[in-house]
Image (cartoon, rainbow, N blue to C red; front, side, top):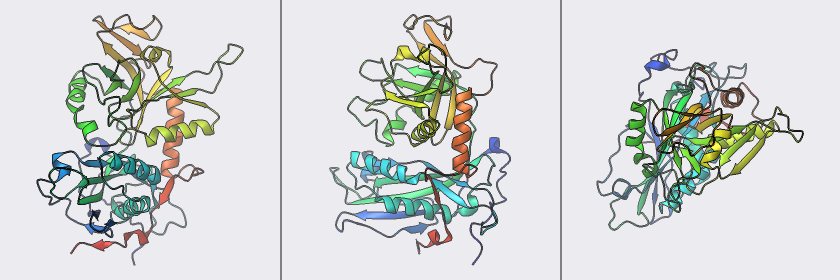
Length: 395
């Protein structure tokens, strides 16, 4: 048997992330649920990335589907690395499994058992291990779990059949580490107050795409959503969770050296695994973490604002712009006018190319844990073994 894991493929220019193109890999893994048996089939390795599905499947017609996103990283080489190229570990797949189950229940699908989800992650990564990027290359292996109702059904209801599949593909990390400008969307509501905003389903992403494209054309890297009922409280960015940073003020009125991390609380937001990871890291350092509603007017009191999500990782926000609201924020050093009927909260000067000190420290620790440079004291890395490749291959 060949050593595992194998070294990264040489067909990808790992040192040129700016030239990233989507890369097909060896295959993906699948399992099907049948209502008649109430069971999931054994994991199967499928080489063809394309699927054959009935055109009347509720997953296509009614949005009865859910998705996830997580990453695997190649760790540093050690004397015990059997493949000589560094072991591979999946980051916090147990948390993603729990969120995947929640999303499935929200669209009336059977939840994928946690052990099946974690095994699928390991199997898909193991069977495509040569596409796990080199350690410290600035890349990761993205994992895309997908669940959808796959048998024809009318009217829709509890599906007769569901397909669970898990794809992987290499992607550059840190392509968006430079500070981003954010635009508040007052013209579009991402989710109703008692709707599906807390589930990771496709419908929560498709609706905002054209608004994100319009914002990008004006130089905004990301859009920010306020609560749909009154547009008075911060919820989340279109692509990731929101985190605010406040400077510590001691009882003597002097500034301290332990920042406060603030996460907006709303029933309409997704439970971000990356945001939770950052908060756990902060708490481990003795920093205070607050989970509470965040009013729009409070934005000008943050010293830094961060976006936290799997695809983007941790990103610094340069500024937040809101149109048609000039004068709503109290005057302050961070609040400026763009000359129109808008107000802008600035966190990072235009000439500064990096995020602030809190961003830098949190990002270094998060990446250190993910990549194996820092001890995994919290048990977040799920190491991939050669035995994880033992699944049924499609004939």
